[in-house]
Image (cartoon, rainbow, N blue to C red; front, side):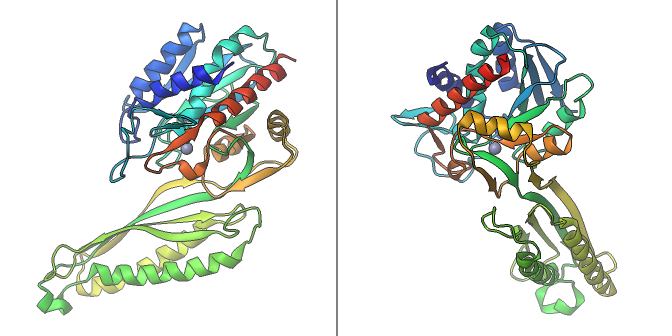
Length: 383
Ligand SMILES: [Zn+2]
């Protein structure tokens, strides 16, 4: 197995603009055709709209629970980013390959696909499952219907390696992410008549104050030195309010999130936020009965901590020839697999520092390391 095949496939994968807001059907068509050209049958798990689909395939004995290799097909937007090259045309600059998704995480998908001919040649006793998901970048939502079919139409893997960029080290824990969207509707009046209106920005400021207090408390609630930073974080991520300098702002919208350590329940903070909002809402309604504060959960990824001494952890460490595992602060599909009873670790090519950035790149040597990893996995699966 060589990284050349992976590089060629990566160029093709990058050429599909699979920003999460777009359909991923063209890339799924491509992957499905590639697999069927190698005589590998795959199964789609479409979403309700038919615009998106996951794909699941098995090489080796069917209906035996084997090792899953998993990755997402979607990428984050390039909007507002300053790129030196076309993000959807992979550019080879010597040691590095540039393009949206090269690192996060089409590089791993390309390696999985490049390894297929070798997997097929082998006499696998333990099957290798290939899992391709969508909408990972918008809260790991797309993988959930596929997990829902584990044990029914799809064999539930005995363990899963999620190939998010870790520089081919083994990641056994990550924080969870919980996000909320808040819409505050007050009453607009001319700003000279402010007391007759309800200023939604002022209400937002009080809520932000409460969030700032919770942020401080989270720093000491649980401290886990495996993580950097070693505590749970809370922050406001987006805000938008007001329309003109002479109108009391009727509507303010903001988003906030908690990235919680294993052992922290972000819902406790969510509940406290709702209580504060309910108090403010009744005050607003004394002036404007139509006023409201609406709070929505926009996404949720549980915190993840693999079971110590699990088969998947020792296998991954053996394949990368390392004896140390790591924890990271970004969420992955590994936590959802883990909670569904498929023990998982995260291990893949590329550095998370390049993910989501303009001029995203991956080092070719990372693809080579990943191909070696998959070659050793196949050897292990033969015995
Ligand atoms: Zn990713």
